[in-house]
Image (cartoon, rainbow, N blue to C red):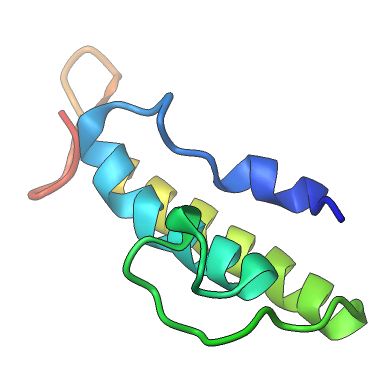
Length: 94
């Protein structure tokens, strides 16, 4: 059985500094859906797959929201430069 939401956890198309942030979320999502016996689960150990039901779907959606928020946090810029463009904060992307 397919789980369409997993497509939104893909990270290989991202630049390296975002891949490293996104990969653990992808691994956890795959472990939730398929159990920890699949290569896509990476080093995550969750045991058997979580049964498919509304709560699993809600959990995957919340995990996706968390992943998106963390990626945005890495990209966040809060200072405006002289030319009006945003400047990355310390530790953020340039």
